[in-house]
Amino acid sequence: MSTTSQKHRDFVGEPMGDKSVTCLSGIGETLGRRLEVQGFNKAYVVLGQFLLLRKDTEMFTDWLKDATGANSRQAESCAQCLREWCDAFL
Image 1 (cartoon, rainbow, N blue to C red):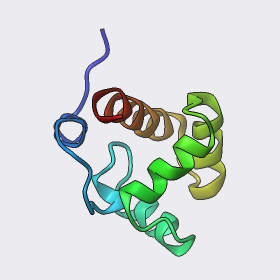
Image 2 (image 1 turned 120 degrees about the vertical axis):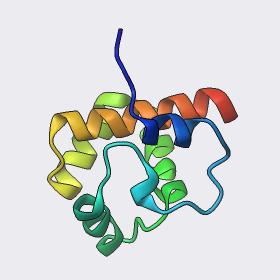
Image 3 (image 1 turned 180 degrees about the horizontal axis):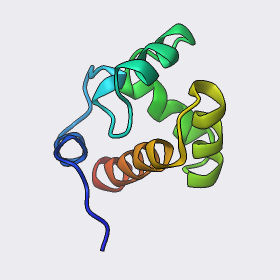
């Protein structure tokens, strides 16, 4: 059974609103700055990319790794967080 961080549970447990990209599980300050430079300053903008990629975890993790230099663990954590949020709120 996989475990999730408190950050992940907090994000998935409530509407996204206007949260910063760094509220996403797997995205810390460094990756957050890299995303912000590319225009992905809010969690909902990253969600938009996830949805454009048809909620395909593999395509999203590849995109996130290419866009930010995230490692596999970080990218998969972010994808899982977004998928669970979608399951709860979409």
